[in-house]
Length: 596
DNA sequence: TGGCGGTACTG
DNA sequence: CAGTAC
DNA sequence: GCCA
View 1 (cartoon, rainbow, N blue to C red):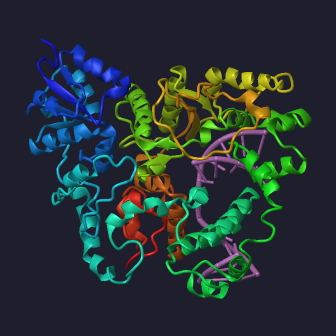
View 2 (view 1 turned 90 degrees about the horizontal axis):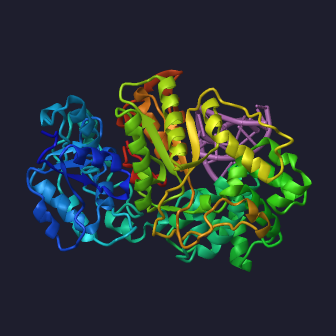
View 3 (view 1 turned 120 degrees about the horizontal axis):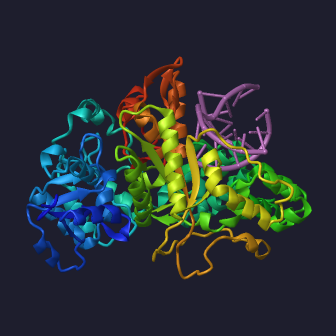
């Protein structure tokens, strides 16, 4: 008698991509029947599902207390026709388990649901915010079926798990006091954030800001200045300009004079006010045009991973205008910092945004490999994905293991995972070296060096880190993805194309992506999640709050006088800082109205 | 006038 | 230490 | 660059 004989399973959000191949084969080998996702829109596939079907949930949607998390993300990964499947599951109370728990049955050689913890999928919508308002914030990526989305999401959430119930309840108590303090601006109604979520661009990337509003002719020159200062390495000045721009965007009235702007808009001081007046008078700013040539040069170089403002300025002042130029005139510039070679090789790929629907595929691959290595380990997508953005610049993966604070185990694991995935050709390159990584990857570094004829100068002596707390990688899917990113990028000059490792076939979109592995101790899960979810602006703002209160906030926790106050419980950290807890989706920009 | 987030990795 | 990146 |  086979283990899963006669038992039906369905994998959510999907089992496609063959990355779950290992598990599906395992199940089928043991006599289980796997319902492939319902592939037609008629819903007829539902007929094959009955109340005894077991739902296998992708582990990234299950938290340590076996509650469903990130239901909105789950729904987004489901195809439109599978939304009804999800409805069916909820209505009929189908049993859900974490897909990783399949291993428990295998281990015990027994299929018995008592062996595992069922996942609680009721009443755990992330749309439940602290203020008790059910926020249906739909991210406007592919808006095919918003209506059905919302219907499901309105399921109210009274049954909270006890683990978070205390923090919930007390933040509720003070929520009403603040409701009137901020009247007009953006927060008013959530539905509105869907229609113009464009305003929530990251502070770094207002390059692609849309033209809107009267104040745009003022903002554009300022944005240019911000980018200019950024590539010049004057980050504080650049940041000031960006903050000013965000403030102008929030200011709904037309700007008629510099003085007015300085008086009424925050983050605008005498200098920017003067520039605004100049723009109002003449339509532009002096110096922008003639500076643009230098700007192009600096931008061209510093777009490459590993090249920052200082290197870019140095190369620019040496009158170099391409990487090849640098190579020919100053070959030693490359002899030392080999990661730059990969930045050069994937120059264009690494600028391409990743549609969030694709991100899940990348996660899946890592998850499957991690499961084989240690099924107790967890990995989560952080960064812009976690904040719900429709496109991500890179993928930030946070690894941890419940109960494990051992840095050696954690470091070793991400290193091993990365190496295994390199052998499977998913990982294309590493940006640091350890002894182990050098063994498999060293030759490719040497190959890149040989490509620019530097092999002789620097035989094969690399600095090897004893262990790595984070792994910076380039990764690539085997099968092309049929979704095209559409952001603008800085193009590699023809002279420099000979180093490119991008796929020649531009009809396929299997770009190389930047992926970062991070680890955190179990005891630091909360502060790490805050840190890696970002955004960077949000982190800055939060850490500033900590400073104001005489505390210090890092990815390792919240401290006062070097004493740890809290690092595990995310909500508690917010509480200690007197900040209202907000879901990751609302951390794309700083929310001016913190309460209490 | 000093401060601007705090940490990890490389050479 | 400076430089770069997260 | 702006702000405390």
